[in-house]
Image (tube, rainbow, N blue to C red; front, side, top):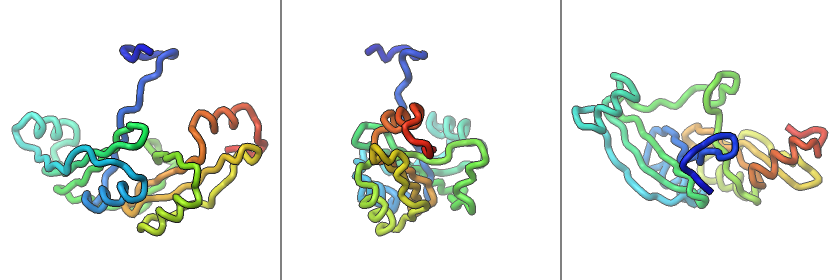
Length: 178
């Protein structure tokens, strides 16, 4: 497979997902304990100074950012997971962390065949189960649930692979599928 170009017949890989949290160390431990993500780099402090990294951060985040910290983790299937703690200005938790009616990223999704156990682990480790566990393709046993980490980031859980679930939904195998 040639990964050098993209297009309708050659989709681009997802490289990583980034979240922000008010406590980098707590988030690293939580994502390692709950999902088994592997820490591959950091924590590293970044400041918006005259260095190459500092100038790039100022360009990306704007003039108000002064300092941030980052760590890099990786999932079992090698999707990168960046965790960012904004230090100056200080990170603040959103009041409404699921404004689904507004455009932008609404959640990220984890695949685990034992949704019940993972939802329990999430809540046991300080997160929250936002929805019931729904068997949305009953004849296949495909389930979903929505949770959140202790920092307010929304996490969807699928019991089966993304393509398998979408294929079932789009071929109309369930009258009540989402």
